[in-house]
Length: 464
Image (cartoon, rainbow, N blue to C red; front, side, top):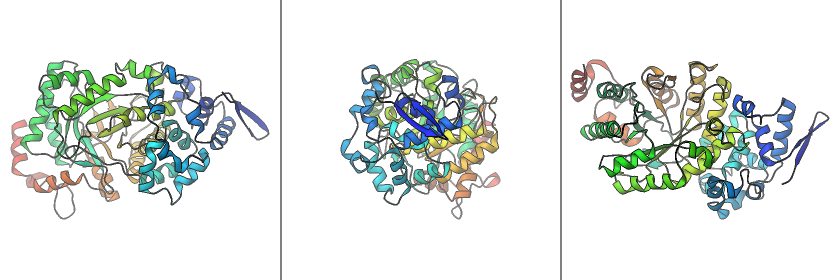
């Protein structure tokens, strides 16, 4: 394994492996300091970034950061690499690749064709030497479109996951949040509940409730209860209507094992979902959630920095042709992303790397209450991701998740982003909003109060 070195300010810094270069080139964040892999000072970080810029992209095919024989995610990355797709950039260094991405040759078509030829480590490496504006500029070039019961990811569109969580899974409370979100034009990415209980019976009842609402009002969206993939398989075996199959994933075999999953189990969930044939426009049906720090929190990071581990999770997601991938960027806490600055940078990195690898990326723009962050920070990240062309964000009443106890984006935040940036919901969902009288034909804005459509006034009365 080669050693690397670079001089900065008269001092020479030595790095014993590619993994060390990657870790010390990362912008400062609390999780990498916690893991003991971060650069000791700004000089070492700059030296690592300059070293990384000179490394050929093809080196990542020859020097595995986690040994092939020790990790099934590494095996997936190497075995699925598309050499023909990689060919146009195979002669470039990491620094040259950054320049290429920022140039005119890297357009939507060429970036789509390139995605199967990139490994997660290549994407992570180039992100480490990019400024915020670079991450935004390149990401907005890329469009990754997915389809199930509607179409998400088209240019000029931004979707939302309506998240109607309830601390006791009370059906009326969940239904009220769903109705509230729909009236603000939220829910086209999906209506997705984080359950408070692991009871299979309760999960099945929530799935039936979601399907009943979607079918009754003929909403062109998809439902999901964010339970373990094995519970979703059991629900499918019981004949319960299930649209999207959910699972949290990470970038190493050991970290995925801490979630109780493997590539084999994920394949079983994917196959079970396909067997239902519930998609009307396409068969992208997996919903994955990720987040920087998950491998470290499980003691399963193999000495890698958290952003590289996060990018490796995208190889797992890509294998299953997902409908949505969501980086829950600030959810794990300040031990991993300390403040608003670190959360903003991490969210933009995750979005950039995911889209570069060909994934339909969304972001839960969020923070825990003990982080050094606030809603102003989230407004900044929301705006930057909107400009960068994010596929979807979260929509939660008042930005405050009453079940998971963290701060995220609200129904109103989605309206802000759409109106400020000229974005619209998924086309099928937009047509439904107009047909139901929720959005006006003129400007695509919601109309509330006495002008509510009769069906929804009746639903409100029943809930009240």
